[in-house]
Image (cartoon, rainbow, N blue to C red; front, side, top):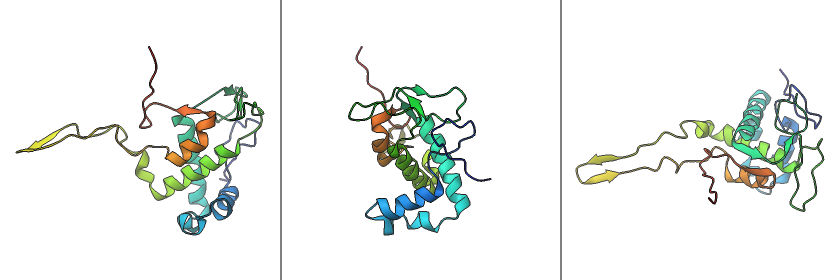
Length: 173
């Protein structure tokens, strides 16, 4: 089944914020280190790339709290949105998918391609182990983040990471 890419109209069956072709172009021309950085992406089959883009989009929607509100009540994904502002303070059109969200999707898809286990066992951790005089304690929150820093940086203008993504919200009482 072909990947259904959100076009800004609030598709009820959208599966991704970015297409395979656009992701291929992103890795071949947008990144200066693309030759070595994206070898794993370019070597993958179209079916694997589509699966990674679907998964990446679902994880972004799950682990990122976007500003504003969905543009329609019937759309499948969290974008397009209304009442979201760019870094300059200008409202993003309710039928736009921001370029940074597309790039975040590409980066997340590649991260999943090279490390599919990054989303497993995020809250499982050894709390203490003692063997003779050796004591080990692991912080269960000191784990690889589901959304890599690159993805979070692309998304940072549109909201914040949801708690449980290896980060904790700090609020003043």
